[in-house]
Length: 381
Image 1 (cartoon, rainbow, N blue to C red):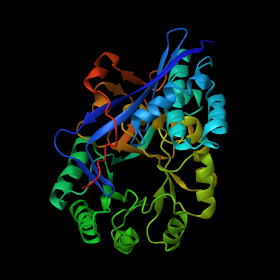
Image 2 (cartoon, rainbow, N blue to C red):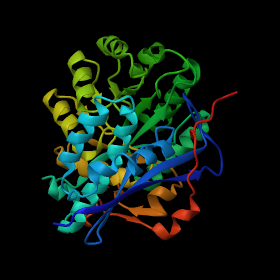
Image 3 (cartoon, rainbow, N blue to C red):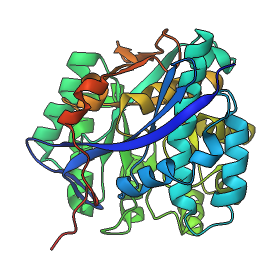
Image 4 (cartoon, rainbow, N blue to C red):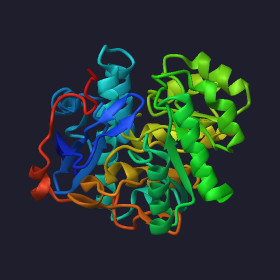
């Protein structure tokens, strides 16, 4: 079997042309993607996405330095061996654990992509998954703190253009404005539209204050009401029985999810394959969720590499999870310099059938999106 002969990572960035994307933790000015690549001795190239962690160049540096000795020389299918060594040497025993987890995530995806291409099979076949069609909801950077009529126009675009019947709205602005937005969307679209909300760590106020109103409006879940360092607050909110509590994009590997599930902190389990250690680690988390009879709804990152890998994960996890679709009008890392992947139609997401992750990377066009340093969320002054 062909071995991996090289491993590299680079940051690519896309600045939003029209306006920043406001969230409770600040306004995003751009998308950053840490694009990871493995090359095998037979010429096979596999690609993955690491989440930038607000320091994409630092994550890329980990891939381009220390992780070389873990990955280069292995065969592409040795994802478990790379996972085991990275956790033992760096994630569970080093001060840069978070950075190594992000680096591992992109490497894991790239290895699965390469192995699928070598075998001529889509990744979900290698994982034993047979489901190819999934429920979805519209999420991503859209549906933020717009005025209610503008927000309704955006939701209407998703419904009319794609047939989406479920959306995730951003809250964490102010109690009054948040409830007004959700109420307006419920009044305009009625009970046929499923609504979830995401507080993005609830930096501006305690979003538990609006939980009764969200329950009255039939909200399907409240995502990340608090920062991940306070699981007891998640437990207390969940115990009130008002709105299902969701989280996971900012948790670490399966060991952290196991602790949160044991505590009774979650109704909806949301790992991100570009943050949690890739498909290999996310499958362990899916098994924990299934054993605890919890919903599984992975979080997505910025590029179609992540989106495609998430669908392959959902297939391998049994096919009963829900997919978060990027509702952005323009995303060159979804349907531009990176393309392919999920097929979205009639309110459903379908898996690509091409070998590997099913994503095409136009390396010749990557220079159009030079990587930027620093956080995409500049500090408010």
